[in-house]
Amino acid sequence: MDILEISREIFTKPVKSKNSIQLDFSELNISTDELFKELLIMFREGMLILFGNGNGRVELSNLTETDFFKIKEYFNSFGVDITYEVTSPNDIDVLNRYNNKRKDSLNDYYLRIVSNVNGRAYYISFAMLV
Image (cartoon, rainbow, N blue to C red; front, side, top):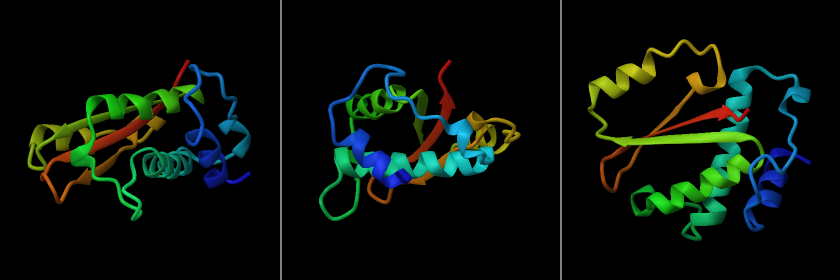
Protein backbone atom coordinates (compact mmCIF):
# COMPACT_ATOMS: atom_id res chain seq x y z
CA MET A 1 0.00 0.00 0.00
CA ASP A 2 1.21 3.51 -0.70
CA ILE A 3 0.92 6.37 1.76
CA LEU A 4 -2.37 7.63 0.27
CA GLU A 5 -3.99 4.20 0.53
CA ILE A 6 -2.76 3.84 4.11
CA SER A 7 -4.14 7.29 4.94
CA ARG A 8 -7.54 6.48 3.48
CA GLU A 9 -7.58 3.17 5.37
CA ILE A 10 -6.89 4.94 8.67
CA PHE A 11 -8.90 8.15 8.39
CA THR A 12 -12.10 6.70 6.89
CA LYS A 13 -12.63 4.47 9.93
CA PRO A 14 -13.29 5.32 13.57
CA VAL A 15 -10.19 6.35 15.48
CA LYS A 16 -8.37 3.51 17.22
CA SER A 17 -6.45 3.52 20.49
CA LYS A 18 -2.89 4.81 20.84
CA ASN A 19 -0.25 2.64 19.10
CA SER A 20 -2.88 0.13 17.96
CA ILE A 21 -2.01 0.46 14.25
CA GLN A 22 1.43 -0.89 13.46
CA LEU A 23 3.20 1.21 10.84
CA ASP A 24 6.91 0.49 10.77
CA PHE A 25 8.59 3.59 9.38
CA SER A 26 12.04 2.20 10.09
CA GLU A 27 11.65 -0.40 7.35
CA LEU A 28 11.21 2.35 4.77
CA ASN A 29 14.90 3.25 5.12
CA ILE A 30 14.22 6.94 4.47
CA SER A 31 15.71 10.11 5.88
CA THR A 32 14.03 12.12 8.61
CA ASP A 33 13.20 14.76 6.01
CA GLU A 34 11.47 12.17 3.82
CA LEU A 35 9.59 10.75 6.82
CA PHE A 36 8.38 14.25 7.65
CA LYS A 37 7.12 14.65 4.07
CA GLU A 38 5.30 11.29 4.23
CA LEU A 39 3.63 12.34 7.49
CA LEU A 40 2.61 15.62 5.88
CA ILE A 41 0.91 13.65 3.11
CA MET A 42 -0.94 11.65 5.75
CA PHE A 43 -1.83 14.85 7.59
CA ARG A 44 -3.20 16.45 4.42
CA GLU A 45 -5.23 13.36 3.49
CA GLY A 46 -6.55 12.98 7.03
CA MET A 47 -7.55 16.62 7.20
CA LEU A 48 -9.32 16.40 3.84
CA ILE A 49 -11.17 13.23 4.82
CA LEU A 50 -12.18 14.49 8.26
CA PHE A 51 -12.68 18.21 7.67
CA GLY A 52 -12.57 18.86 3.92
CA ASN A 53 -15.17 21.05 2.27
CA GLY A 54 -15.65 18.76 -0.73
CA ASN A 55 -13.59 21.01 -2.99
CA GLY A 56 -10.23 19.67 -1.87
CA ARG A 57 -9.77 22.33 0.81
CA VAL A 58 -9.72 22.55 4.58
CA GLU A 59 -10.47 25.91 6.15
CA LEU A 60 -8.12 25.94 9.13
CA SER A 61 -9.87 28.98 10.56
CA ASN A 62 -13.04 26.89 11.00
CA LEU A 63 -11.36 24.11 12.98
CA THR A 64 -11.84 23.88 16.71
CA GLU A 65 -9.61 22.54 19.47
CA THR A 66 -11.75 19.39 19.36
CA ASP A 67 -11.04 19.00 15.63
CA PHE A 68 -7.29 19.28 16.17
CA PHE A 69 -7.55 16.81 19.03
CA LYS A 70 -9.30 14.36 16.69
CA ILE A 71 -6.49 14.45 14.12
CA LYS A 72 -4.02 14.05 17.00
CA GLU A 73 -5.88 10.91 18.15
CA TYR A 74 -5.67 9.42 14.66
CA PHE A 75 -1.92 10.07 14.49
CA ASN A 76 -1.47 8.64 18.00
CA SER A 77 -3.19 5.46 16.80
CA PHE A 78 -0.21 4.71 14.56
CA GLY A 79 2.48 5.87 16.99
CA VAL A 80 2.99 9.48 15.95
CA ASP A 81 2.32 12.56 18.03
CA ILE A 82 1.26 15.70 16.22
CA THR A 83 1.47 19.16 17.71
CA TYR A 84 0.26 22.46 16.43
CA GLU A 85 0.56 26.05 17.47
CA VAL A 86 -1.57 28.94 16.25
CA THR A 87 -0.09 32.42 16.35
CA SER A 88 0.24 35.69 14.52
CA PRO A 89 2.27 35.27 11.31
CA ASN A 90 4.46 38.18 12.48
CA ASP A 91 5.30 36.69 15.88
CA ILE A 92 9.09 36.93 15.67
CA ASP A 93 9.69 34.88 18.84
CA VAL A 94 7.71 31.91 17.52
CA LEU A 95 9.17 32.21 14.02
CA ASN A 96 12.72 32.32 15.40
CA ARG A 97 12.04 29.36 17.71
CA TYR A 98 10.91 27.23 14.77
CA ASN A 99 13.54 28.47 12.34
CA ASN A 100 16.38 27.80 14.79
CA LYS A 101 15.65 24.09 15.14
CA ARG A 102 18.62 22.00 14.04
CA LYS A 103 16.74 19.35 12.01
CA ASP A 104 18.40 16.50 13.92
CA SER A 105 15.17 14.68 14.69
CA LEU A 106 11.62 14.46 13.40
CA ASN A 107 10.23 17.01 15.85
CA ASP A 108 12.71 19.60 14.53
CA TYR A 109 10.78 19.74 11.23
CA TYR A 110 7.62 21.78 10.94
CA LEU A 111 5.07 23.03 8.46
CA ARG A 112 4.01 26.68 8.63
CA ILE A 113 0.67 27.55 7.05
CA VAL A 114 -0.69 31.09 7.01
CA SER A 115 -4.46 31.27 6.62
CA ASN A 116 -5.82 33.66 4.01
CA VAL A 117 -9.08 33.78 5.96
CA ASN A 118 -8.00 34.77 9.45
CA GLY A 119 -4.34 35.68 8.90
CA ARG A 120 -3.16 33.27 11.59
CA ALA A 121 -0.03 31.14 11.28
CA TYR A 122 -0.33 27.41 12.01
CA TYR A 123 2.78 25.43 12.92
CA ILE A 124 2.48 21.65 12.61
CA SER A 125 5.14 19.18 13.77
CA PHE A 126 5.43 15.46 14.47
CA ALA A 127 7.25 13.19 16.92
CA MET A 128 7.33 9.46 17.35
CA LEU A 129 5.51 8.18 20.45
CA VAL A 130 7.45 6.04 22.85
